Image (cartoon, rainbow, N blue to C red; front, side, top):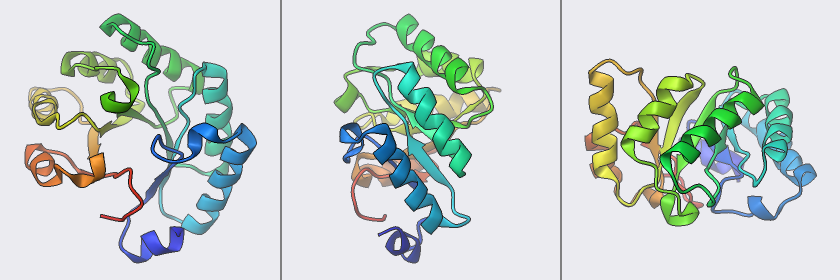
Length: 190
């Protein structure tokens, strides 16, 4: 399957995200999937989803993935976060736990997590943590959020890559707003 994606033109992969079996795997199984995918990916970047209910599990899987050669990790917020301050504090704790040298993808998928992250809150998080290098934008459709983030960058905020999910349903519109491409959560390369 990994070979198939690359043969179809994928630039890299994200594994162990929210739409697959990752939440049902043990840490050992997640590490095995990571190891096998990285072995097939050769020089292509692989981002490993490490979302978990606790920071210890995130830390353990992050260390294993990075030691194996992952390009970075992806973390979605737990559904218990309700306020901007809680969200900001959570990502500060994640960065402190995994290390500021680990490239991090912030997964914004409110339809699944129930966590609404405003553009303002994303800006605070991005400014505070340069290791957050990408937003996986899966707000539905959230087009204004992409425009607002790109406008803030035009005014001086550092650039953060934006890749979109949701099976590419709004990809044309998202690209017009400034997204960099797709990182779909379905088993079809786009």
